[in-house]
Image (cartoon, rainbow, N blue to C red; front, side):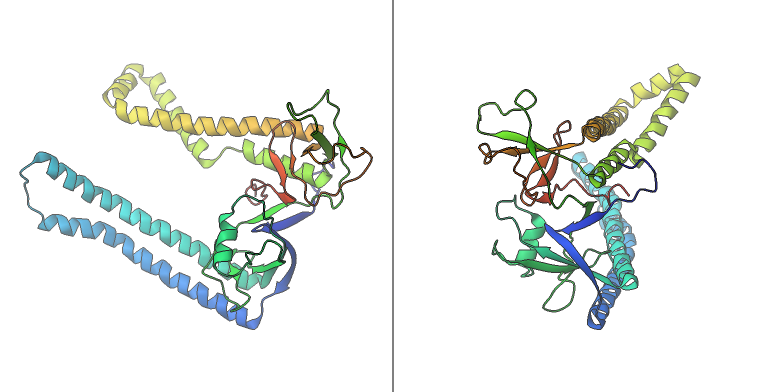
Length: 348
């Protein structure tokens, strides 16, 4: 694989199990529909922003009409806890909803500026695991429930909203996932691994085939390795927090220990959260190390139970293969489609 930073590998896009085959321009009617939906989202955004202060004012107003004392102390504590929780949670939920609406409206604005629609085509795998995206599209009448039918959808690239072919409008804003992956080989030559290297115990008729990853797939693997090794914002925040504890302990160890003993429930929660963050990051580093071994090996393996009697020199296409990587054991191709964890957008 090329080692230069200027190497740009070809990619392909997938959406709801269908490959993006081409891009076309937005029509005039579609531009009007997208602009109208963007306007609706912006109005909803400001409505939720206005609701955030209400979440604070309403509990305070209710508290003024409540009696000052209760016959049971626990009841007063319960009412106070409910009002305080409402003051904290309600505005946060309003702001989170407003943030989502703002993100979607900005996505539609970028779609209008880009002026493109992604056209996806293909047939859905009837034996694939249930997909929530596919289920929503079938329920909306955008995709056909017939597994043998040729499916086609149009998706906006920035907002990932589906343009209904019947109305030319986003069909209820279905949140789709547009995955960008390395372009795989259109033709794959696989050879069986010897039994001394790999076998399936209890199934002598099965064999494990291998093929070589192309340079684009190798480059995608390296991109995922960099993503897994890059510390997230949470890791950086907790690193600074632990550094603060270390500095405080070095300045005055007794005072720091007394503080931890006096507020041990809070410190215990912080230790648990720190353990979770460290655990997730450590797991990502281990997966990155195994993926790096996969890049050095450069193989994708296929478990085949139907070709045991076929000569090894007979080529096979990768149209319906299910492949995995030898060291990380991560799925690479699932029934001819990229595995769900593969998305270069996450590594951007």
